[in-house]
Amino acid sequence: MFFRRNRFRLKHGKNLVIIYWIFFCFFLFFIACALFSFQKYQQAKMLAAEKQVLTKIIKSYAPIQISVSVINLSIGQSFSVGSSHPFIAASTSKIILAACLLHEVEIGKKSLSAQVGEYQANFQLQQMVQESNNDSWHAITNYVGLQTLSDYAQSIGIHYDVSNNTIATQDEALFLQKLYTGTLLNTQDTKLLLSFMQNTNENTLIPASVPADVTVYHKYGWLDNYIHDAAILIYHNKLVILVIYTKGSTTTANKQIQLFKPITKAVLNYELGVD
Image 1 (cartoon, helix red, strand yellow):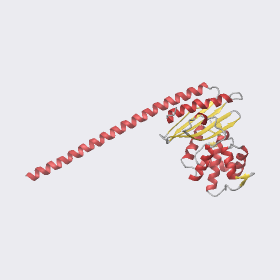
Image 2 (image 1 turned 120 degrees about the vertical axis):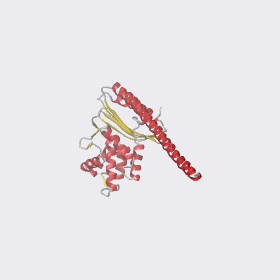
Image 3 (image 1 turned 90 degrees about the vertical axis):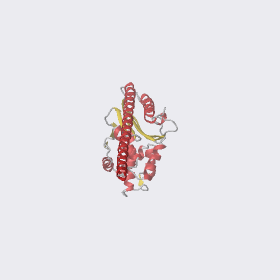
Image 4 (image 1 turned 180 degrees about the horizontal axis):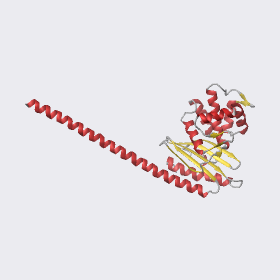
């Protein structure tokens, strides 16, 4: 009788422990869900505020057409404000051509030591991206071929009209995301292309409004009334992609350059916590 009672108590005690453990796990799960929901609520609230600020800035520069796309890789959030239509990409598309060339080299169809125009392909590549040299751009375009470039853009999920050199900021931002995360090229070629983008000959647009402790990889574009910049911004392991395209008139160049500052500052503040 004594042993029966002990076995009953032991079994009953084990059941209570299991029940308590289930309730405890449920409680932890509830707390985790609540924290996750609160975090998402805060992110949504911040996003709405950021969009409102950027939209106000864009409206203040009318009639200049502006498109802004942002991807925050740290939290997996992306959005666009302003015009959603494709713009003439100007020189920002040179990094797509650069990636295409490097991809062709990786699969053995092209070579960086090949003679491309007056120089070898590796020198033309650096000149095209780092110095935004148009002669190098034309030389590499002829070497790679427009059809190959078009096929490449389509294969990586980028809507880029090669014949008209037009692209939307959303697709330019997506390209930068794929480039930085190593989806497009091997590690060596990714680092090579980023190194050219870190040392460009024009830093008066997005980089001009970025503090020294923020790493910047970017490619600007300036053609007639189109002034653009597309950048990867890194601060304390936080990574944000910012693409700003603008279309003005023959008299708005100065205003177009000026608008990069408030837009960049706003994105840095909301996305990276940088004043």
